[in-house]
Image (cartoon, rainbow, N blue to C red):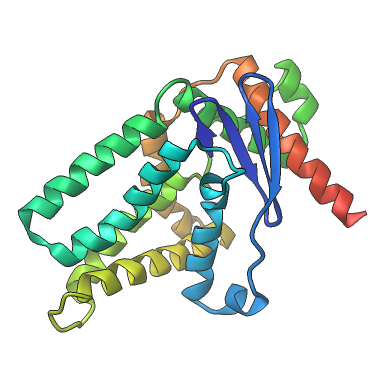
Amino acid sequence: MARPDGVVIVSERYWAFAGSDGSLREGEMPRVPELLHRLPLARGLTRLAASLSPLFRRSGVTPRRERYLILLAVLAPLGLAVAGGPWSNLAGALLSVALLATILRGRALNLHGAEHRAIAAAEQRRLAASWSGAARPSRFSPRCGTNFAALALPVTYLADRVVPLAAAFWSPLVVLVLSLALTMELWRLVQSSSHRFWHLFLLPGLGLQRLTTREPRLEETQVALRAVAAVLARELGSAA
C-alpha cells in the first residue's frame, strides 16, 4: 500500500515500509490458524483483516492520530449501517472524504504507482533494471485494492437486495460482513483464474487506477523497490 511518505510491501509473513526520507521499518505479519486459511468466506475476512495489520500496530507505519481515523473509518460503517436513515448516509460520505484526503495527501498517488511498478518488477525479475530506470513496468496492477473496492460495491448492492434477512438492527451488519466475504472469494477466483471471462471483472478497478495512481518518478520507484527488496530478503532468508 502507498502512504503519503513511503510505500508498504507485505507478504504472507513479513512487511516492510520504505520512507521517502530513506528510512526503512520492518515487521512480521500476524499468524493466522491454518484452519481459517481453508474455510470459505472466513479465509477472505481473515486475509482482509491481516492486510491492515501494518497500519494499526504501534510499531507500524501510521502516526497515532491517523490510526484512530482509519480505525474510525473501518468501524463506522458498521454503526452507520445499523443506525440507518439519511443522516447516516451523510456521515458516511463525510467520513469517506476525510479518510481519502488523509490517505491520498502528499505524493501518495505517485507512490501508489511506484508500488505497482516495484511489485511488477519483482514478478518479472527486472528489479535491477527498474532501479536504474532501464525498465518501467506498468503502474497498473490487477491485485490493487482499487480493484477489490470496485468489486465490493456491486456485491454489497446485490447482497442488500437478495439476502433474505428479516428487518432487524443487526441485518445491515450481517449483509456488510457477508458482502466483504463474498467479494474476497470472487477476488480469489479472479486472481487465480487464467480464463479471460474472469479477467473482465478487473476492468472497472483498472479504470479507477487512472485516478488512484500517478506516473512515478524514478526516485519514487526506488522507494518502493527498497520495500520490496526488504521483504524478499526476509522471505528468502527464512527459506534458506
